Image (cartoon, rainbow, N blue to C red):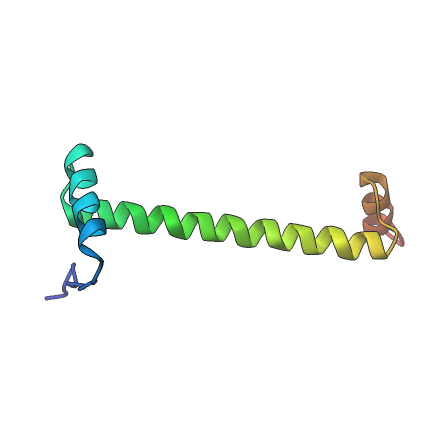
Length: 81
């Protein structure tokens, strides 16, 4: 039978552990549920930051090539079609 959960041990300062427990209680979640939610939120934020970074890179590269407007993009995409 396949395991559906794997225990993970994390060490944190006592102050953080206390705050974590209080937050779990305030959210009416057990610590495992709160950790999963926090981790999922963190992962999503990282993906969003990566996407924004890629957008910035794309804008920089487009500006270097003189592509400044939507019309410039369309001209480039449809050129030769």
